[in-house]
Image (tube, rainbow, N blue to C red; front, side, top):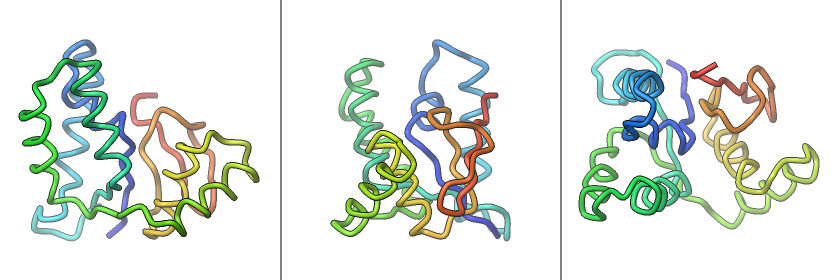
Length: 141
């Protein structure tokens, strides 16, 4: 079983009807990575940062009703969720400095590494790159 970290854009595309191709890919990924799917397949990992960003993007950009967005977040409890700690913030600062990445992307990397994830699914970092032992994969590439 491998742990796969999901960046915010995966969750947003699952809801966004503007790009049906990305929506289909994102929904398929979410379904395949739910931890309680009953077998030993890959499992998805989220963070409190991802859930917060998802809520803001959904309610501001996609104009989703706040209570609906809250319900969607509640439905994501099948995923392991990592709480952002002061130590993760410090690690993200180091990652940002060492790898010349924006802080928020570095926080994703630091959290995925701390959670022992094999890879991060995102379109925000370079596909195929390995940072702190975590492989970056763009599922939309």
